[in-house]
Length: 232
Image (tube, rainbow, N blue to C red; front, side, top):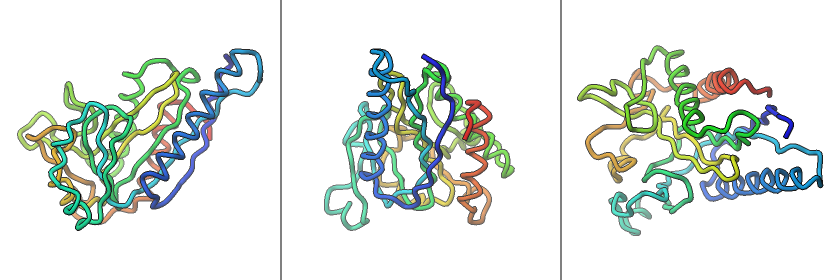
């Protein structure tokens, strides 16, 4: 198959989680259908790649390997906090999305880039690490744990970006939840990613002031473009 590293970037603003999930599923199906047709000689069109930037109203999502008991709220308490809850088809455990958190969903056909999920995850992490560095925040990885951490090898380790993906026929969906101006109180209602001995943080928490989320989005997009070597 010929390669197509062109990526369409869409800024969806504050969007309902289910609406964004359905949109990802639609783009994923279109890409997979094109791949099948291409291999069968029925089309010369190559699957397209997308990057979706958005924020969500308060929502908790539980991945395929997650435990329902990691959500510490019942239905009534969820309603009180105006939060929704979904069991979804990505990897990983439970996490929170909400206003002030930058959520990024790459719908990438990895056969246009590289067929290596481990490398894909490390590139997503690296883009966030570089973005944080642009704001003077030093971050990194914790061995054996996905995501981006601050002081990850110390007792003060705290997670600033969670990740969970699905890949079907080398086409990805889901992605990252990057705490920019996130209300961290909502994390107290879950055991984030199933990890009960480490804290969560945000850029706002680390720097002491509210961050321009559009500026963060642009810097993150530039780093993703450099790492994946794609064109917009």
